Image 1 (cartoon, rainbow, N blue to C red):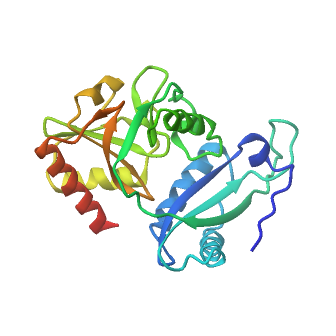
Image 2: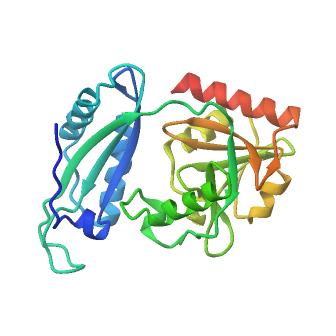
Amino acid sequence: MTTSVPLSDRGLLLGDGLFETLLARDGVLQGPLEHLARMARGCAALGLPLPDSELALSLMQAAIADAGLECGRAAVRLTYTAGSGGRGLVRPQDPSPRLFATAAPSPLPTAPARLALARVRRNASSPTAHHKTLAYLDNVMARREALAQGADEAVMCNTDGHLACAAAANLFWIEGGVLFTPDLDCGALAGLMRAKVLAAAGALGQTVQVVKTGADALNQAQAIALTNSLNGLWAVSHWQGRSVGSDPLAQQILQTLIDQVSLSA
């Protein structure tokens, strides 16, 4: 199935819209209702009508089939734009959004991640920091910066200098047996896998602190990990060129959480 987006589309011209990226295993979407619920929250924040859930599910399933990805792991992207029309920044009074889906292979990473600090900052007061809008240029530039430094992923701080997230993941670290993650107020996306990790930690009786702190906190970390819906909980081997992950207790905590999240996925 070929998707055609006209040159007048507001998502294309202005980044006016939302998206979700889901994992599919052997053709089965993982957590689609959770992703659609988050898209609905984004619609409320952006003033867009809700997408049709049944249509969204059928489009995602069709994208998997069209890409020949009924076996193995696939990344399924659902994109929802504000449609066409309006003058400049002003939408039509009754917008007609566009909804489409694509799918691509999504193999698991074969090695731990290497992280580098990006100069690009998150604006914690912007809706683009708290919803999966189509305005992802900051994330694109942060990832590009990390790759140029020989890293796999970028760590982003907000304009106040507090840790927020990675370019396409939430951020966790362990120090002194305590699991830390940035406060959502710092400009982090409310990741669905982030929520699963916090729930798993609570079920295990693991001490968790949601914090506002600078990037120097990662210099003291005994383990660091990233979370998103495609990779689950992904361990980190290097931060700013420094090896991390040699502390046995921290690694035990991290592995327990990885196992727990894998069971619940």
